[in-house]
Length: 120
Image (tube, rainbow, N blue to C red; front, side, top):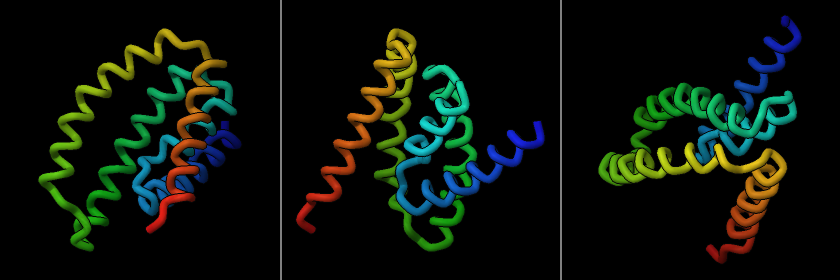
C-alpha cells in the first residue's frame, strides 16, 4: 500500500505540472498511468476525471492570479463539455480495453502531429 501511495502521489504531482503547463487536463498522462496499474479503461477514465477536477480547480486559481483566463469562452466551453462528457461516458462503456487504447493512442498521436507541424 505504501509503495502505491507514494507512486500515485508522485504521479499526481507530475500530472499536475503537466496539466497546468499544457492545459490538456492531465488525462493524457493519467489514463495511461492508470491503465498500466491494471485499471480497466472505464475505471481509468472515471478515476482520472476526479483527479483532473481537483487539479483543474487548483490550476484555475493559479491562472486566475496571473490573469490568464477568458471567463466567457471558458464558460461556453464548459457548457458544451458538460453535454459531451455525458455522451463520452456512455460511449466508453461499449468499447473494449484494447480498442480504447488504440483510439486513445490515435488521438494523442494526431494531437501531437498537429501541434508539431503547426506553422505558428
